[in-house]
Image (cartoon, rainbow, N blue to C red; front, side):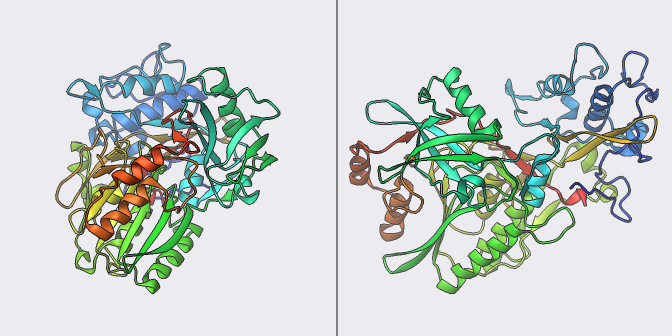
Length: 512
């Protein structure tokens, strides 16, 4: 469900681009504005694809006011709009809106390096439902999800193995008991699934795990037993917490949880979600136990809703951070000059802090740790001791507002076209730290052995963190050697499988 409304007193605030609106009207065969901009051809949208290309271009580059028809108001939303030359959205050069978008986002550069590897169109609308409402569902042609993430991993002899990284507890895989570390030895009876670096086998696995409505897997469990399980794609409520526990380390209580997506704590109607309920219960448990250190495992977390980043930061931060700046928004020059009129925030502050009294917060990071995950850990640095263990993060200090684009046919029937996610803002913490387009380096490296169960003290990341809590040092040479010599361990081959998981941070509040 997508609900987008104007806020009273804040005209032209970011809204759904529905053609019934006086602001974003687009009927096929309607004439585009003659305001001096380059609209191409005869300025006519003849197809749904024309409508999508036209509206996407105008939103990003011209203005979101009056459906892009009043250029004098000049409020382009794209963060790097002034680096993009005016393309012709109706040009035959761009067969699809994705072609046009790819061209537009190729221009922003810093020191010769392309900046925008993030912007995209979602033609199903499923992403907003997953992130804002916390629901995976069958909609707009999608079949739901099996609910597991996989990767290839290597043993000591460099032989590849297909391993389950995790499964959402509420998903078909989670309900069937599929666990992290299980090896997939056959899919639909086919055991020819060895890693081939993006070749036929990798494609076969990707389609079976992420694109099929049903697949049968033969698993080798951690205890050596096998099981053949058929998983059917389905709708389910996201549970972003894969695992949680409390350890005792050198007499101190240490909380730990694995968080795989930033599904929002508030839904499209502004009501609390199941994600908020899960997090409320988790932090109440940590507070009751009197934890003194916290470990947040974000090694596979690609980001999501900024509202959840704000929730986590306030839950983790010390009481002294109350009402102080959590992070700053940075927009393009046009939006910055009109913040009052648009209602866009300049900064977000901490609220409801001090629930925990922590000595340290540790984040387990990986090359998939992105966007809202990076925002969360970066926001805490000015106020407490923050340590990162793992790998350099993905690198995405910029985010989106989401725009729903639709058009209407001659009978007045609405036709949903796509959700647009094009970079709208950058974030920096209270000390103006940000700009991590190349990622954030860890304080100490950690190796991701994907067949070590969640929470095991044999996990390389946890072992190093426990060492720091006990001794003030991450040194664990003996442990590293012991793990490296274990023939049963499987080391993650990074980016060996492309699952199509969303990568980013979205501020949904302006859609409500």
